[in-house]
Length: 76
Image (cartoon, rainbow, N blue to C red; front, top):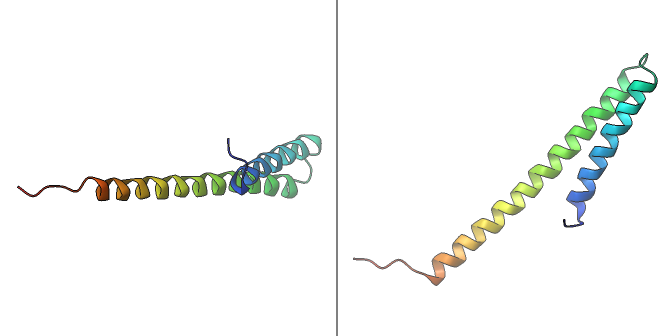
């Protein structure tokens, strides 16, 4: 696991989700704050996963380009 801003964003999203769930179970009368916290936590996780996927795709594309330059196709 790499410790970068995306990992910290994911952990922050998990923490926000758990905090929202704890607030919801503790006092179910006011739903606005816990639900918004839980939605924010899920959004944080989704954002971190999307950014990590973008990094992986960029890496794979760079590897493909390097491979094409090393092994050019021969015309028949």
